Structure formats: C-alpha cells, structure tokens
Image (cartoon, rainbow, N blue to C red):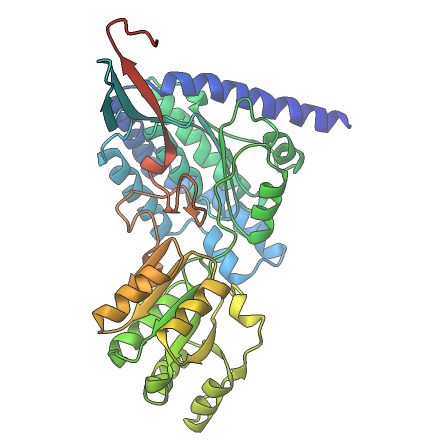
Length: 427
C-alpha cells in the first residue's frame, strides 16, 4: 500500500469517526435550530452565486476536454434552474414537519406498561454520487433535518463545485450552533477513498449511491454497509385501447423529451392493438418533432412506415435498455395483461404509466405493475422528491425493504421502541 493510499484511508476513517460523533449530537438537536441551519444555507448560496459559478466553470471546462456527453454536461452545469431548485428545496425542507419523535404505534401491555414505536435517525449516511452538484445540497439538508450526519462522496467531474458547496454547508452548520462535522465532503478524487468508506460499517449505517448503473453495482457488490439503490430507470408508458389520443401524445412527449437524461424519463411505449393504427402515427409524429429516434417491433414499423414515419427495428435488448437519450422503443400489444407482463419483465420497478379513460383498466394496471411509482394519465417525469412534496430527495429506491420510490425525510428515519412502566417484571 502506498503512502498516499494510507493517508486516504486515514482521512476517510477520521471523517467517519467525526460523523458518528456528530450524529449523536444532531439526533437530539431542536427542530428550530436545524431549520435555522437550512435557511442559513440558502442565504449563503444566494450570497456566493458568483464564486460557485466560477468553481463550476472549472468543472465544465475539464468535462468538455474529457469529451463528456452533452446530456451529462447539462447535469453538471450549475444553471439558474439548478440554483433555483436548490433554494426552493431547502426552504421547503425547512418548512416540513420534523419526522423525529413521531409516534408510529402504541401498545398497552397486559401487565400495564406502555410500548411506543417512535421515529429516530438512521445515524450516519454515506451518499456516493456523480455529476449533479445539487445533490451535495439536497442530501446535506435532508440528512440534517432528519437528524442524520452525512458523508458526501461526489464524482470527480463536479469536484470543484462540490467542494465549494460543501464549505457553505459547513459554514451554515457552524453559524447555527450545530456540529460542523455533521456534513462532510470527502476531499479527494482517489477511488481508494470509496473503497475505505464502504468498509466502515461500525461508523456508517447506510449507503445511498446515485449515478450510473456501473457505480451502483460497484457500491452494492463491495459495501459492508446496507445499500439503498436503484440500478436504472427503464420506464414504460402503456397507451390503452380507451384513451384520448391528444392527451396520450402530450404525456408520451413529456415523459420522453422533457429531460431525457434522467432516470424517470420514458424508454418504452406500449400501444394497444385496437388503437395503434390511429394513435401511433400521431404520437410518433410529435416525437419526431423533438428529434426522437424510434425503434419498433414489426407491427409498429409497418404502421409507422405506412404513415411515412421512419422507425428502426427494435431488438430484444432494446426493451431493457435505459437510453438516457432521445430514443424510444415501441411495441404493439394485444391486451392490458400483456402490457403489465411486459413491464414486469423488462422494467426496472421505477416509474410506469397507463394512459386511459377506463377506470377499471387503470386500477388493473396500478395494482398489477410491480414498480415503486405507478401513474394513471400523469407523466413519469413527476417521480421526484420535490414534486412529491418531500422538499428534495436523497435518492429513488426500487428496493422493497425500508424505503421505496423517492426518499425524503421519513425514509431517512428508522425507529426505536420506548417502553415505560412502573416496575413490571416478567414471570
């Protein structure tokens, strides 16, 4: 092991120990003090916009030199929209009820003592993420409000921006009288830091990776700490035989095109055979105006080519591919049952939608699709913590244990049992 690796190992271990100590203090911090820190953070971001953009420019320049894709470059940019969303998210989180101490259940034991189940923090949460610098702020404030210490490991492509944002988080904590070590950014690009972090199960209680499938699989396979994750977002819209074609067109275009590089963008479209010849050309024409490449099964290709719309042949691999780009795979199906079976086979349990005017069909879909979020006549792009009223999200989980879907304050909590009696003993 090199001296550099030993130094990084020691650095990460020190960060984890400090975070554990800070988490025990933060768990009992008053709600008003936590809110004060979050609002102070928003103030500091507004005051430091110019310096933040200067640091972000360094990251953008390096990314362009390294040939990063336009979609990834957009995720990296500290745009007006990203800054506005960060500030709105911070203020919304500050306004939300504190989840800690909430009574979940109460049981009166036959021997006269009370058992109460209450929300408590998880402890120390490690967040490993790529590209988007807003994650630094979103995760810091959600962990803070829910009483958890956070260790942030951002990607090298946003290193300068993340360092600058992390310093502001630390200042906001200190200005509000909270332990500055309650949120720490690991200040190195070396992969060795991640390898150490994933082994520290005595100090860290939960790991949340956010990024590409490669990163998430690496974390899942190498972590000694429980991991909350989703590998990819293969989201499907199903246009049922009872549908409003204009509404369907708007929903498909928005789900695919509004921001194609994110995990809640649509990758597949299923269309019921009874309406395919009428609906498909109209939907496809609208997608083509947005420069979407279409890949279809034989029935789709025939229908679209007869309408003069270009469509490539879809392969078996296409149905399970997360494009993160302006590409959509289309298949004609014979029934809602076939649509549900397709989604449960090829989807990633993320976000799926039925477009229909038939309530019974919608209920069948909503109950039959095994995904974290299921929609009826709503764009899949709404799978987002802010849109769900959570203020922000620390991630989206497609797991079923502990948390599922967008994760906000409550999903960052565990619980404990408080038992109060008058001297009862068990016979």
